[in-house]
Amino acid sequence: EIFPTAKSGSQRVAAEIAALIRQKEQSGAMCVLGLATGSSPISLYAELVRLHHEEGLSFKNVITFNLDEYYPIDREAYQSYYSFMHRHLFAHIDIKPENVHIFNGELPKEQIKQHCVEYEQMIADAGGIDLQILGIGNNGHIGFNEPGASIHSASRMVVLDNNTRSANARDFQNISRVPRLAITMGIATIMEARRIILMAWGNKAAIVARAVEGNVTEQVPASILQQHNNCVFVIDENAATEL
Ligand code: GLP
View 1 (cartoon, rainbow, N blue to C red):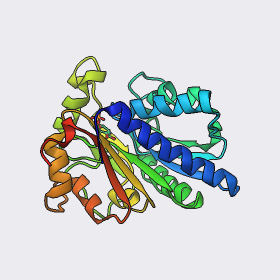
View 2: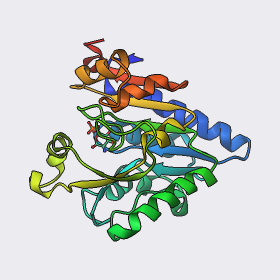
View 3: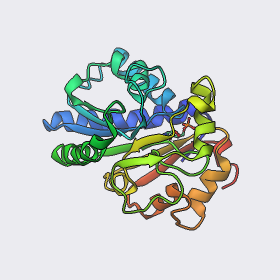
View 4: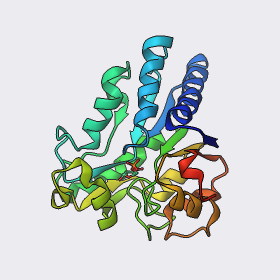
């Protein structure tokens, strides 16, 4: 789906999320959202905050699982995805703190495997992810699943590509400060979501075209989404120029 601007695309995604939250609320159910970071979802979160303040959208029946986090990183660091999510969304809505899940980048390395197993279990205990929001990296990554990640991968610790580290260096003083590792949901974790919306704005035309129209290959992790039965790419006109 192609929109003139990131703002109008984000409004469409926010409207779907709001409808899902309200539909679940009416049947007394929880709504389980998978959330992303990066620049792409910022306008989505701004719109959700607006819907909360201006249209009474409540997040009391919402459970969230974030896709990924740097490793190691202090939760309180400006660059952590924990800080990002609170800054852009959680601090401004009525979600219950106990319903927010983000990988913990502060744990000792030897605890990460167990942490990932528990994270997957919490997703399962919540009934699985109803709707997963994704961005896309310039190299086709989803979450921090870099090219080559297995379609069977579960949540785990990964090594970041230099390409990703240099793209994300904008948030750090320089590239050497960008963590070399991260914790991410796996491709299999993402593919189990019942609905997936990938958002891409601006300078992403080449990778969007490879993901949507290219071969399905682990070298372009987002191309695997072609095999999901309920996935949409919501993009702006700039990101659509190579389709
Ligand atoms: C980051 C995140 C991804 C995100 C992607 C794109 O590294 N780990 O989840 O989708 O890269 O970022 P942006 O939206 O800023 O282009």
